[in-house]
Length: 633
Image (cartoon, rainbow, N blue to C red; front, side):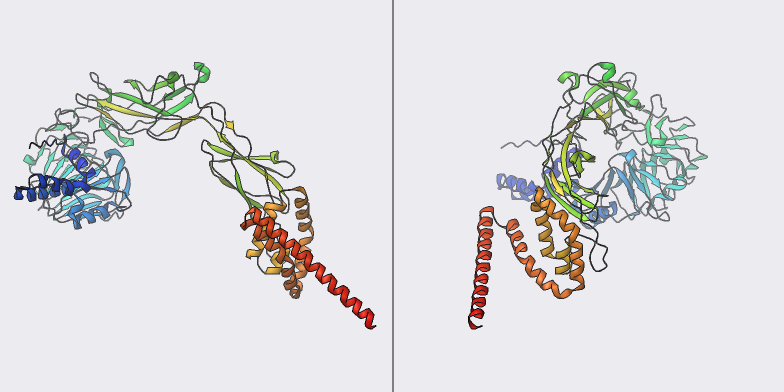
């Protein structure tokens, strides 16, 4: 039997492929073993090979639920090699003092060189300390930014420091090592450091780097033979420059203030390094964006702005402008890159699947070509959606002079409008955003408010721009620019929800009473949050306030209730009697909220009949007693 196994084009792709099938590794191995069962030794060898390959390709990510810091991931890999050998660090800022010690194989990779920042949490310690590393430790694609020392190497060999940016300021030493260390410092950019490379030993290789605006570039005790293919410009002291050197020529960085150290066209550092570029297989560039470990993607597009140009175009249209990306891979004279414009009207953020530009003929993304910094998207058809009406679920007096309003979300709503008033709900309007609850404050206690909510829909376009660099072998695209949004057309509003009443609780200026309503019940049961009091309050809100007679009753209660409550507080002997009087009402309220409507009818009717019969019986007893007294008198 012939079995053909196709490998990925690169080891990194192979690792990613193996990562996705890690849980099937044993199944695959067992299957191969069954096929070649006659070759027992080959079977066990395949087990070993698969597990070895998987363990060395598996990667962990930072930040994640399991590894919130880079140091946590380093410690985990040092203690358990089965987790793999690679730490992928997402774009962001990390303030840590990292320590890597021992012979473990670990590769620490930033997601994007210009946007993955390492700062020293404690400036008296290095950002990264590597000690007793024997081989296969790699640190690449980071910006070392804040600290007195960037990387310190102690008694280590075979360490690779590649494709990083070091800009620690005039008090910071980028890379320092002792006399027992040898490393490979390849394709880094050193800008504005005190000492870029302070080499204690003599065997560290320093290749394809750019040293610009440092106090000292390379310490003088480094062997000249170990330094080659580097660019030195505007340093106070270049130190050891080695061979194949470029001196006192501006490397032409794109934008130092934005941390964009890509090279502009006509830079003297293009194709002047040793080896090849991973991007296009040409001779390697010097600096952080050349060589085998380069971050291959352009810097994200800056200063994106959008405007509505309907008046100029005659149909719904958006003008988009941005600043040019001046990396030579984007602006190249003979093989330029270009820009892509992404848009969507359904949601914010990637993947931007707009389809309505030029009346449905230009789908997102639109390749707008090279050497342009503006584009007009025309022929748009903004969504014309009238959302459904929301449903108010509750109106609750949360505290004095305040009502909390709750409603259900509407799928197409981009916002909500709250209506409220005393005589009419249209007296006041508030656009409350995308929330589904809101606290109305500054109301008048004891006054009934009519409340309604509507859903709003505003057609909004979300836009982003990317840059791409064309090479002989691939098109490499930057990350998305910062998103811009633009409202198009008029806002659409739903019909109103049902109008519900609400009444903020009145303040009672009596020291023994709380400053909320339900005065008599609160006084009788002793505290505001008593379950019986809350039940009566819910009965008021859901049943009494829903019709005119009930609202009249509530108003009268708020006039005379506080007086009755004060009397009960001054005469606690009446509390038991009041609780007994309130008990039937509490029972009825409980039935209304907890029993089905048919059962409610039965229970309440039965309660009324029981009350009538009880009163009749009581009246008969009184009549009989009176008749007996008349006879004996």
